[in-house]
Length: 113
Length: 116
Image 1 (cartoon, each protein chain N blue to C red):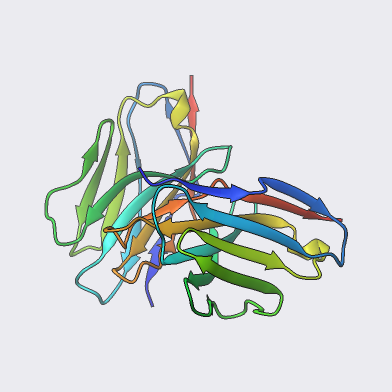
Image 2: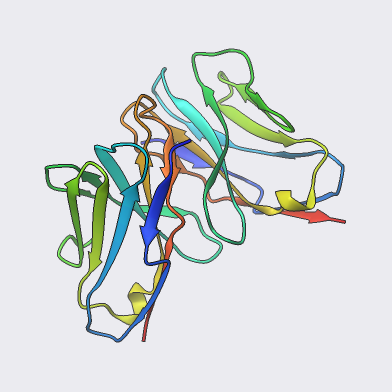
């Protein structure tokens, strides 16, 4: 069975600084997808970024980028120029073509003004 | 992008009553939808996979007679919590896969259920 581990229950960052959230996963599949979702206080899940395992290039979306290390089964999220609106719970997730996702336990990010 | 709605956004009910939560894909058809339960500051727990035109697939430990799922059309799945009890109080979230990207899920805004 696939597992997703987020080892940082809580993280904090100063506004305008950079923070990295960690995620590791375990799978025997070779073709899969990885995601970071943001859940703000409204509790609406928002897709932040996705990465296809077959792509070596790290995905980027504006201030959000990932460091995907397939051999190490690591998928960290870097948030640059942190903003107050980035404060939320962040979930790392794994999926295959079957469509069913496995989520990590989440990391609560606090942004300090 | 793909939009998923849920109704109601919150509901309070008496113990013993049944509550129905609707999940709709607004601008796309979803053959598969997922239902999650989330407790405060915890991760999403998958309850079941809802398949249009067939029976839902429930995760281990989820009572199928307690949580009835119906996927009546390509844009609507419903979750009915039958004979609700206070321990059923939780945040329920549905999601659907956008067509063409089966691996990417789009989430509804969630439904807060409080059973008194």
